[in-house]
Image: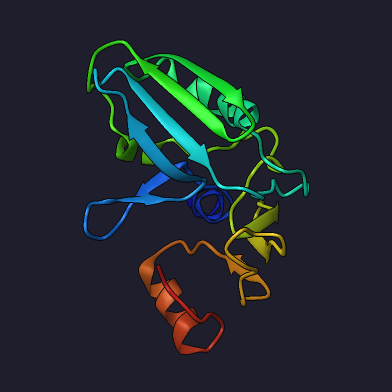
Amino acid sequence: PRSAVLAGILAAEPLVSVGWDGRPVFRLAESATESADGQRLTFKLRANVRFHTGDIVTASQIRDLLLPKLLPTTEVADVTAPDDRTLVIDLKRAHSLKAVDLGQFIVDDDKRPELRTGPFKAPALKPTAILEPFAEYYMGKPSVQTLEILEYSNHRAAWTAMMRGEINVLH
């Protein structure tokens, strides 16, 4: 369901996303460099990023979560983690992937939702997605205490719920 997709976006993050101006916004990574030959991207991960389990995120864990997504669909030849905060992506062809392109790859595992790092935890996704703030989020705990994502059968039903004061926001 669409509510699960939206919940996943709020509960998980990529290494880098795209800002409103089209420039990279570092999320789990704090920086990225490209080799002179264009065949290697090196990411430095933020310190003290935690999974929803409370465990510190390491580069090898990020590698393991990203590999199944990257290898079959991109120009990635290999992904390595030389240390806990460094992730290296080797490319098949020079300049075939930029740091900002990784925004489409969320660092998570659908079968293990606790291996997410986003501002909200999603303990329940069916039939309604109910999200709770992640107190150890690296950018600070969200001020919203509970976020409930509902699906409506049509726009009219959603607007009716809004007009009745049953919901606060429509998307």
